Length: 379
Image 1 (cartoon, helix red, strand yellow):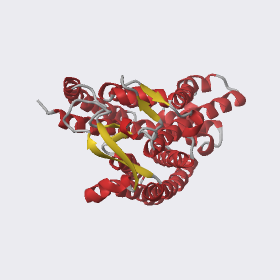
Image 2 (spheres, one colour):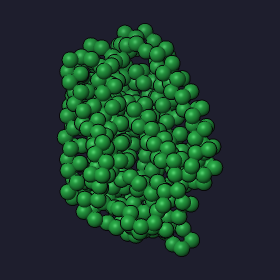
Image 3 (cartoon, one colour):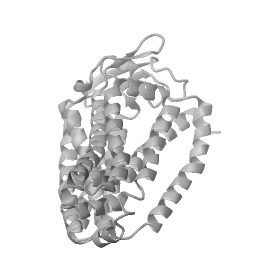
Image 4 (cartoon, helix red, strand yellow):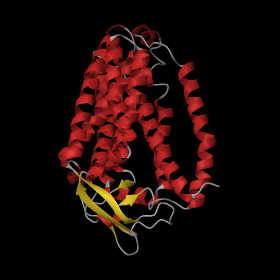
């Protein structure tokens, strides 16, 4: 039997793995959707883009659903508070995602330019909006979210949707969008050829540069322009969850504390920069497979940087710091975490194995000739 403190850390890592898995697997689908109206210059080229992800995008949604389910099961207070505070933002994500299944299924049903162009822009929305909003959400977590608990541990959100769209959060939203688009362009390089390949290569290098620059600006902003949070009392790692049983202070430079105390954590943001820089270089020398791996490493580093920076905080409160939710006090019971741990050890490898098998079986280039010869079966 694993002790409670260890399980809390394990589930922090597991949810991080699920978020990174979602970014890598569903992220390249969204990146392709973002690039759809721009890399594809005519109907056949856009159908090429759609068919590169057409066989996998529904399966990749499993990472999104599993991530949400894991947060609900492992961090119920975070789930309840986040979906209350970010209600309209999450609704916007869901509304934009509606365009994906409908767009894939109906776009090519009618051979009409207006019809198809409308769905192309719908698929663009479904690819562009979710990464932007998820990035904005991470920005707001770093700044602190305006919520508090009462004596009965009922959460109250006192902010608004428009307040979420502040300058720093919009910057982190652009970081998220740039890295996802870079990743999608790398995937297109693997699956396409001719003009579509060349435009994808250009997009990969462009958004790789944007990822590096925006990530650097966001890092400087966090280090110098944002007050972080620090626990100064209570919040015992192995204790029963009670988010009000701790003392939290807000101070300049607090988000840099983990890097000062544990210098090896600097490797995480370095991975973010190094992966993006290697992606640019490998795209330039026409190594799309390695570029895709590099952009995956970059996303691991960028998402991991947010986690390492805030640890042990998950959802800091800007209006009542004591109400901030941490890895230690926002979790489910010891038994729940342990049962889910062993279930994850069984099923996560199966998901990874099946996904790898499916991508291997359905690999290869998608060309304009393929789309033309499969006009009634291809997307």
